[in-house]
Amino acid sequence: MIREYEPRDEQGWVRCRTLAFLETAYFDNVLPQKEHYESLAIELVAEKDGLIVGLIDVEYEIEEGAVCSRGKGLGGMIWHIAVHPDYSRHGIGRQLLAAAEERAAALGLNRLEAWTRDDEWVRQWYRKQDFQLVDAYYHVYFGGDELSGRVKSDVPNLRLVSACAHYTGTEIEQFQAKHQRIHECVCFEKYLE
Ligand SMILES: CC(C)(COP(=O)(O)OP(=O)(O)OC[C@H]1O[C@@H](n2cnc3c(N)ncnc32)[C@H](O)[C@@H]1OP(=O)(O)O)[C@@H](O)C(=O)NCCC(=O)NCCS
Image: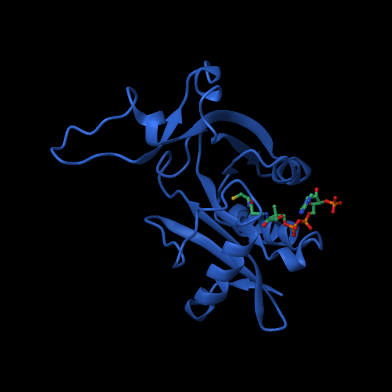
């Protein structure tokens, strides 16, 4: 059953998202609480046998350009979509998206935007739902010696031991030789009918 998120769902929401993201390039992006948004949001869950098995959060614009990174008109940003791995590939993600799209269209939104990392199967899921890949950049993680000469602290007695940086240039090879962890982060966009 797809329904609106309620505050009593929080623990199930957190567990569902954590388990779903554990299988992706966002494996260490763990939230201990549900995220809440500055703007308004469509927040839905899928419930089965008393368990939260899926979720979608779409923060949406009431002022053009306030939430989405691109495009004209009012849009919505999918900050989270996740299906509990024990319930994956049964159409729950597709149904959550369809329910969110229905609400988005009724609110007068013209498009949805979503960002995801390298996981080809997740990208494939977005393509199957008629999203287009429209933008990309990199997340580069630095640790220990990798930081030297690249990132430093100007604060006395503060030594950086790790960092995550956004790289929007075209010469990603300069990092690949030395760095273990680089993710391509891509933007998918779908215009609503
Ligand atoms: C992406 C996601 C929401 C899809 O939900 P779902 O309910 O499992 O997917 P659906 O049933 O709607 O669609 C199934 C399709 O998704 C893809 N897919 C889903 N899980 C997959 C997996 N483990 N391996 C390969 N393909 C998979 C396939 O294309 C599949 O089609 P198929 O079964 O005919 O091959 C879900 O897999 C998930 O939570 N992923 C991790 C979280 C995430 O990355 N979210 C997006 C970034 S914010």
